[in-house]
Image (tube, rainbow, N blue to C red):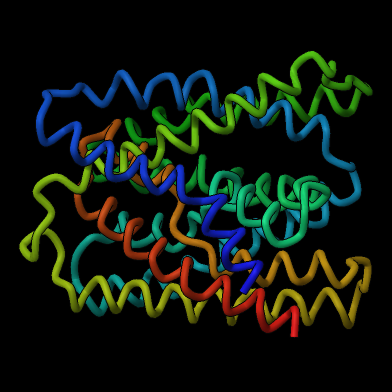
Length: 303
């Protein structure tokens, strides 16, 4: 029960931002580009560079590969789900592969495992971000642009270049000066809060005509079961073949499969005006499910 209380206390300020964004857009005309552009072009690239440079090289490689494989493996169940529902192909694919590892994960892991767990979390984040900000970004750009134009949009994604720059700096032994520690904390809070605000803004006008509730339930159910199944396979392969992770890292990876859809989905959807309301509804509902399942998972580990 104590873990559950700490978890909810950590996440509460960010959840309030969803309500704030919804109320704001209901009463004031807001250009969401003013919010999304600084996130995509400034704060998120800075956080990628900062955390990659601070992560242990060995864990960065191994945990990021496993999380990348999780995101990539979610493509097959996403395709099967789209074929069954017959709508929202690119939204479904990106929703399956995007996990809110960084900004839902940071307060969650701090509440459950303590601040020392953030290094492992960031290693996990790198893999999902590498997949999501390339292939996932393309999937959300594709409905609005032709194939070549959508690919050019991916190549303009600043996070890809930020990640490449961070890896190059790491190879040459560059370390992030401690003077940036406070800036990283503030940037993380800004991105978390702003991402939740965008979710709230995109909830305006959401109704049964946006995406049928039965379809929403099917998407979230298949996504959850697929993520858990794929992660169990990856953890089994790691344990029986490599056996390099400790039990806490395995628990963290297992918990990631229960994480909600990343706010990036609605950030990018806002940039492209592509199924914004449906993406916001999926994210909000997946977060509600995660807020129930993760405390249960943590309680089982504690018992």
